[in-house]
Image (tube, rainbow, N blue to C red; front, top):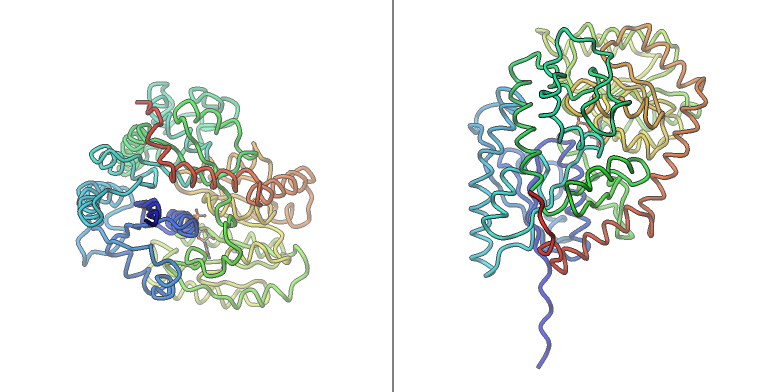
Length: 484
Ligand code: UDP
């Protein structure tokens, strides 16, 4: 009698429907597919339509016959705009709606195949929904925190910040070091704490409580996955090991591959906006390391005043710039489209403005010598991998922590946090493009090399991905002692 093939592990993936979270999650799902895993990827109904228009779903299904998308509600009425009333409200609606939806999907998958999936990999921000469902079905949950290890560690201390009297922040000395997060006593000032610690808006309170609840649920996960690499964040990864008995650091994930031909990966495609590839040709006409790339990610918005400070600072620096301004990035104006058109006209001969760029390719282009960024975690890792020093202007959640690490831990850029005055922009741009700060150039070269080594075959991130695949295959995770 022929021996039956062992069944492939089946992983249920629960992402957050935002570009910066979906991209690494989809990439991880694809890497697991290349290891022959069966994948059920939960998309919100709204997002799935967007997704269908950005990837060739038939080609995708042919490549990964064991990969299926299943849709779940996001808790916002179908005809309402996204992200709903605010990001805080959307996250709360999303996790509330996800709890029963995940259970329903698990019931359906179990009844179809006679067993539930092997495990759930959930965005750390979805921990409450994922852990509750995992515990009900007796399957392990791996929390994938798409932030840095340092920031993940910070989020585990949000309650300490209140108990230590650091939060709320208004009316305090913002440059004072925060002493109640072990290991970060000499790193984070009050102004470097995640944006919602300022508790300036009603939403900040909602986000604060939301993140405390998710961090608390995340402690019950069987393992932690991080998009970072060991050499970059050893101290914080070690600290997180006091909470999680298994941690898989698999970054920079955007360039990790377990196949020879990763060109068809859907995760390399932009999900929400069409890329203007022509900017690569524009870059071709510029000398090596002469251009400033300016991009503030998929969520950050500006006032017109802020935008003009950046524009004047860039123009006054005299350095050519390639600036991504999304069509929805300018807020508080009646006719943002007209403003953008005027800005583009006035930029001719000085730089180029596009609505969305192939960012990874832009950063890898030899003409790019500096990255003016909002310090989103994907952007930070992409810049490190490409070896492009950063000028940071954080505006939201983890970006405040990341930019501090860029300037004061890894020393691979400058942090202009809380002020975008044109004179600061001009000075920092000149300093980076003219390579005035040798320390930054040298550290970036070293760290970038480590990032590239870490994803090579036999590099630590490559090996950790392999280890995670082996652990899921042997359902090793079930034997992990959970720490409540
Ligand atoms: N991105 C892109 N083109 C752009 C701007 C951004 O492809 O013009 C990508 C970028 O490469 C990164 C992601 O969008 O992978 C943004 O993620 P990040 O975590 O940096 O910021 P977020 O958008 O979540 O604030």
